[in-house]
Picture 1 (cartoon, rainbow, N blue to C red):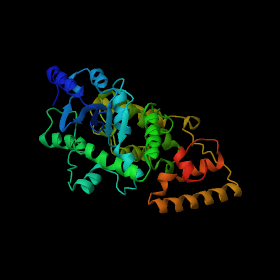
Picture 2: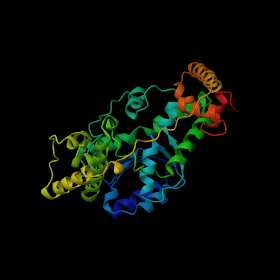
Picture 3: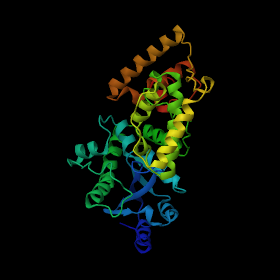
Picture 4: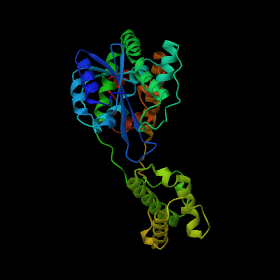
Length: 348
């Protein structure tokens, strides 16, 4: 584990001589509220390194050392968002083995499935939900982390060769670039939707007011204590409280300190006292009238997509999802499909 400046400088020196680096990350989102980058795995020239971002090492120096290199990820979207929240991660030539596998028609896209298929190795999943913020890492966690980059070089070579064989490299570049554009943006929270847990719509309107108030209380407590929300109160318990409290039925209170529980009771009482005018309103669904002509065009496009997908041995959704085709039929000027997808569908 690289956690000291001396070993970190050795890593930077090693990376200087490398043109390609395999990368992965581990984060802690199951044991705290604020997601933390806990580990960076790097593979190069048959050497594997685990860097500790929690040790106070200057990540900007690592990012500078990686600038201009070809980087191999598996499912880069999450890793890139995490790295870019941690600093100025460079725009590199990135090869994403998950995107490549999808475009090659692989039925199973997980790294474990691909490693088992091509290298006949079964990877352990035992540390998938481990607490990566703990130190020291167990030997099992170290092995798991290294295996996430151990096979990426060879897997990338295999998939790159298949993409060239199928003449789908341009598909890959376009799909990869769309993913990269998405990771440069930030996801915003829709405050009026977050509290609407699965099953909330079956509750009466006053229960919505209770649910919203308790959800906001739980979120604030989780932030304050840097704990995952379910540590404070589960979604099931929130829904039960929202359903039973207005009916004056008993329900399971969260097992928390007396001070936190007192805040819970205060928030609950305030929510129950709200007037009907203050209760949350249903979400407005935007219904678009679909003409017969649009339905016919959609069916024709879908049938064509399915035939092309069958001929290419691809999942039809890779060529175009139903929602993308619906948008294309209604608003052809909205660019939801990539050029290679448009070409396959005869829309170019």
